[in-house]
Length: 355
Ligand code: IPM
Ligand code: MN
Image (cartoon, rainbow, N blue to C red):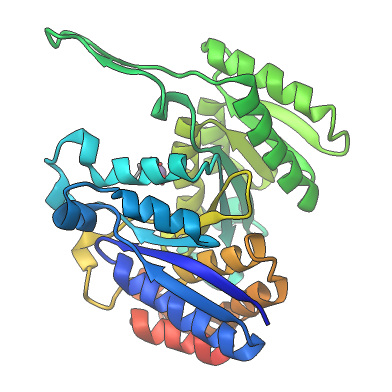
């Protein structure tokens, strides 16, 4: 029996519904394995702008720092499209990543056999399924580089800058991930044009000396995008910068079928991580009990495994999800002929009952 403190950030749109779904499933894990999870709910994103005038209140940062881990729904929505950039929902997300030191972002894109039809790619391309891990650098690069705008508004710039330390530590995360998988790592950059990419490539090469069993290749980002669409099975682990990782992880999740299925983990130097679905806040279906809670439920499973070391518990969740899909239950986003359509609550309940 173990006890853990979890900060919950439901956020905006469908966020509160999918977080509730994940908690339903975590309740079942508590019961089955005799653990205790204590929750503290905090505000971030649009809801925090409305309540506190900022997307990331200091109290949210403090509560997250006090917790063992953070589970996040989603933030943002059209309602806050016109607020100043400094308090935008997205700024809150970037701020919490930085404040918690979460420099690595693991985004697995897996196509489950039950959902083969959901991929937009042809059968001959998908072949034996799809399993790619995108390791994205999360607290550096152009996202956090110096931003400037001319006083007379005739130009603006964002700086892409990486230190050796930043590249090294994300490279290590990627090599470690590859060691646990098929030992193939593709480092993606734009070294034919960008100095920061040439530096990235050299630094990854240096780190590779410590991982002789991993087969390292380098690929330009434009080619990587094309290869993901044409022959995704060539990839095992991809490591890349903040911006390229943002783009490629959307692509890799899209080819795996439903973005509603994919979890992610953001980690730093400590065990504390932040776990969230890859998808956004889907304001168009918010409050309608239609959202797919599986990405958030799988994110909770990643939290159990990676932050708490609860491997069997994480497996229990994964197995339960598989069984519910095997039985033909589907939310609208992954619905196909002959399947049984269920809502957010029902899907979470079915998974928790399976546990
Ligand atoms: C993501 C999102 C965020 C990002 C936005 C909302 C700031 O697109 O997590 O991929 O660009 O990192
Ligand atoms: Mn993104």
